[in-house]
Image (tube, rainbow, N blue to C red):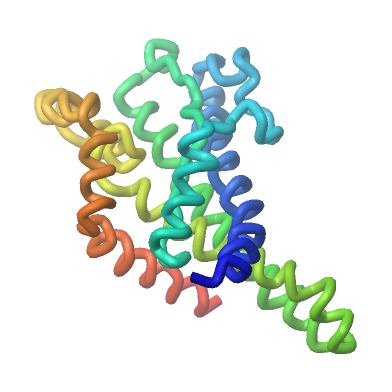
Length: 222
């Protein structure tokens, strides 16, 4: 195992991962605020300062372990969930689904913006600089922005899995009729264990990877 390569890749991926998961959570809280729930705002969770959002396991240990054990092929993480009180919504079932949806939507927007910056700003600048300048200044930025595209697509795709408490599960609960929504909601206490099991067994890759590749293909057409 080449530890030097791993350390370099971790340093390149750390900022994009942190940025992706913080904006993901802020998006949940901001949309909830716009829909009538001020809980996240009152608790200071609409800040872009990453410190209030950091979860030791989800933000640091989990991405690092996945990166090492999958040789950088699959990296996912999470921040502290933004607190949302559905009772503040005019239509709790619908508005909770909308708030949940904006997490993955934000990540897909970040992926597109990262790709556009890479294609139309960083790569053209890199082509005009001397090799030393390009290597020392622009190349690390290119690697980080490239990582940002992939990380945001994977995070969005993973969160679309229809298992509560993942965003896809919450969106599905908002779409389903009331009775079916209640039945799906009963899975939520076990949802995280189900997700871990899917990741450990590699089942999630058969779902996430094809969809992520589709999104990446569509983004590269821009």
